Image 1 (cartoon, rainbow, N blue to C red):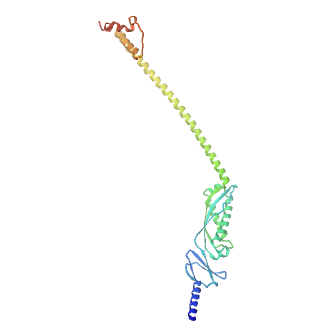
Image 2: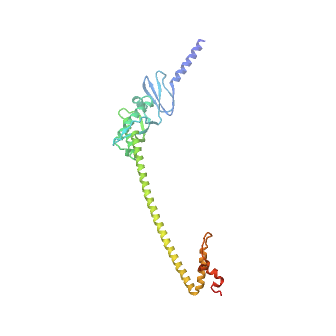
Image 3: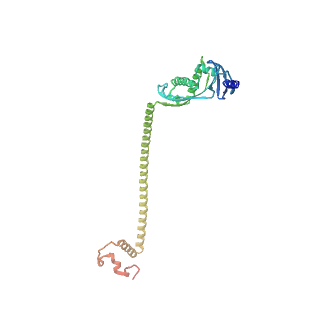
Length: 299
């Protein structure tokens, strides 16, 4: 019975020792093997690997994927013309040499991100000090980002290399500080209002000009129409007078009779017209008074 217990305990110890000697490296990680605090091996290939049991050796894992570091502070920077601007940026980086990274940076990705943030910010500050706001907003910003990337690479590959690679550096936003931004917005608003007022005044002047020209043309058209109407009326009156004259010349009696009828017609055009006349002493009713005998051609 005691031998069986010994065998079981031995088997358990053997399993524990064997499990402490095996470790798995993921394809997204580096496996760093330590022996009493010193790096003895860096495993780059994924799979099952063997090491000495704890406490003789232990293993730590570091991410080998492409990492992104975003800017976190909003402290303003000075441009070449001493304008205070706030920028946003990001960096794409990866760990390429775990040994150098652990010796010179730290054991985790966070340690590298913290130090890299400081280096990138200092590089941006140095490059922005050389450029104007116009440069930061134009195509020259590409040159700025390239120069920053070079400076950061020089910093991480110095006499104590970090064991990292800087893949890309991007400047995503450039803006004035809040106080200056408000002032810029007010100036832009005032400028837009000035342009709007200028356009309104120009439009008003053009409108008055168009209305004046339309009124002038209207008066000219009315005057020309009145002139033509008077000419036509004069021609009609002349023709009427000529016809009347011819009528008088051919048959004066009939012309007088026709004129009398026209006068009757004009006199009694309205029911409300009232005339007080003496028929016996008035030539107006001569035709009515004489009857058919006064009609031309009648005997």
